[in-house]
Length: 272
Image 1: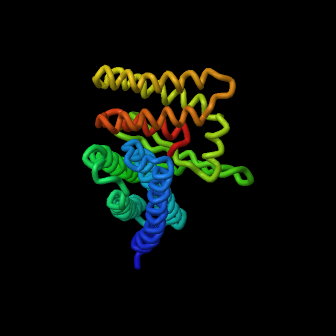
Image 2 (image 1 turned 135 degrees about the horizontal axis):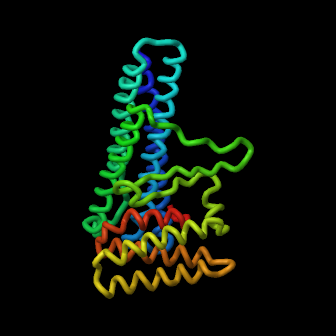
Image 3 (image 1 turned 180 degrees about the horizontal axis):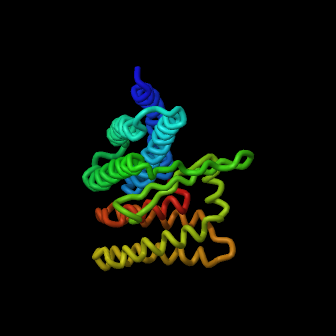
């Protein structure tokens, strides 16, 4: 077995375990929606989208980190044709990552069939963007410009800050939650990030050409969030409720152009 085949086999097993974790997350998120009587609420799709997109991001990081270690080790050992090593490794990385993303979006989303026509375009857009993301990462690896994200220092809490760019360059990001990310969001240390994400969403809303009634409904929730952010001790429960209400409206009218920025806002609020 070649080193490239061994990498492919090892990463295939690793990503299968990762998908199992996502499947568990989708089931958990469905259960949480039922608890708040939101199983018929199309806004519940956005935390699920975030969970799946985060897995694609984490998979690219894990696979390409191992791939880079393989190529760097070949260079240290003075192997012939290091560029060919990188190309062959990139081919294996692309293969397992694309297969992982396709398998992620084939998981059971546990959505009410009545909602599927409304949320299917958002899922399809998310799938397309996740595939573009991993392919872009592998392209960077092939050009030898990809670098792994810096790990947190040993001894402190583990907070993962991976971001997924959705729908093209800088049109939206989501944060991958680490072990302590929920605690970080709940204490309000990300108020500035929420404000930034909210401003970006509001700017996109202004040019989204939705009906006046729909725009007014969303703007009312935006005003609620902004009011909380001006307080010394904002209520993050109120902010999360208002953000969830925005998600329901966006999904209900099929405003897919707002989906990436809405996911970014939900991530900042700690809902993903």
